[in-house]
Length: 424
Image 1 (spheres, one colour):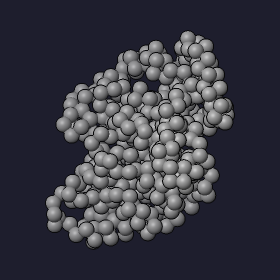
Image 2 (cartoon, one colour; image 1 turned 120 degrees about the vertical axis):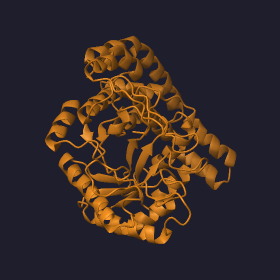
Image 3 (cartoon, one colour; image 1 turned 180 degrees about the horizontal axis):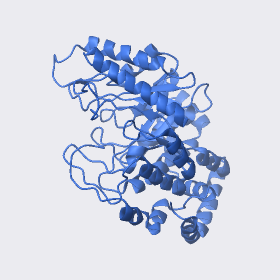
């Protein structure tokens, strides 16, 4: 972990400038009728989960270039996640992926407690074949034509629920790569019926206080058709399964130019928004750092979320889901966590009374200007002050680099070699 003295020393270099910037922003917001302390309190209480797999170097279909100090196992991953939380104070939970992260529950809980972390939604894996499984998922898992293969996939998801119960998790995220690559390869209707039958078995195993999130994805690894391909199909699944079933929105799992914020609004309206996997994309499911390509879209998503705050039953889960090919994963995840907080803070600044008046009055120009007023406000002093007051770093990346953490773990974690393909 990073010693507190390093954080304090780095903060001391920046504290005076931060206070001046914070006070100046406070005066600006006060003129708009906004209490900066109230915004800061909301930002400070907001957290986004870190995926355990995110702290490793990603890759593409063509190659993977491992970085120094790659985590060897889940306990190394948790240590890296602990560093992110210690510097950003924005990532208090870790989302595990099974079977990648299987380990005794008591050991996982002890390590998490040591690092000040807790466990978020569990993630099952039926898009890969594991060494000891009898049936292959090459042609599908929960929707496979073979009943025994489907049963194996159902059993795995139920196993994930049992592991999660021991860790204090309250949700299961199910993403499958099932689909087809050729016209005629599968019957769309029968394939979807098999999927629903399997998911109903998983749903039946949910504890009363759990939720299940189904995740849609337009393409990959099935490129002609995908079983859960868009939010409409996802909504149908959630309605078919029951009150504990919700839709998970991954920002990268949509075609270019799709209006994701409208999808979010629709799912909120009908009570089926389960949560998010935050990332960014240029062409498709690029899994780029959150806010790196289109920060305005991220803000527009949060504009819908802030507008729904206080609505009965509204409690979406938030998690980062990225692949880091050319950056230090810890640095990328820290920046992404702060970008999510930034979008949240900016959305809190939107004058909703004025926006509603513009909408009802058909004043298109002033409606969009009202939104942009929030987006254009530099809220960095709010984010940094919230971090500092919680014991985090004013500048997380600079502090991380000053700590020499990457070099230290590289000295004890064996170097990973090889350039095999794969995103994880």
